Length: 303
Image (cartoon, rainbow, N blue to C red; front, side):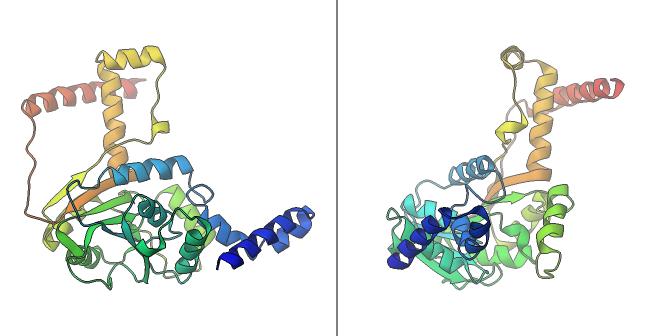
């Protein structure tokens, strides 16, 4: 495989020396594989968003778990599997694609920092995962759950294969995903002739209900905004820090809507139910914020 990789590299170098018209056809057979192993830097979605989401995901890893086994469910091109492996985890990559194993092998052969002994492949969907019960300390679902036909079956499987104190982490689109302009354009361009392809909404209220029915004890939301969604010049930021009500309400409105409708990051803990309790003064603050929000919307309406 190493010789094969070197041969492909030499082939690319040779092609690059030729005319652009010649390159267009000769790169066609190998370019997709190299594009795939360079994700998250070369495929579709902005790298800044993928890296931001990855950081958010690994920040959800649970401290104190000695079990280093991680399932990367819906691993795709394997970039998350690769990075988790380089962080020292024993990673099982699972995907329904026929080619993902070849791409992941190419990743391993192209980077000696990857420990191939701690990467495993399995072809499976999220409804039936060929793993023993109580095996994984963590499960990562990065843009995967919304492709599942049956959320209940998937969450039951994840619950089954997690150790008793394990955690399943999700980075998913939100409640308005299936009707978003981006999704509709993607389907029309790439998947309109693929009846098996599915793009579902991930509605937190629904996931909470299903997860409790599957036995998960706790569901925790990690709200955040993509950095480019909100930025402030210094003087405006100074006002914000000093408690400018309209700026606070505007930011909170973005945070609440974005982390429900557009992008959701959350995790499910396997264990006894734990319910959060609102902080002291919560009701008074809720009334105050509600009044400010009402005035904010009135001002926007009058403008």
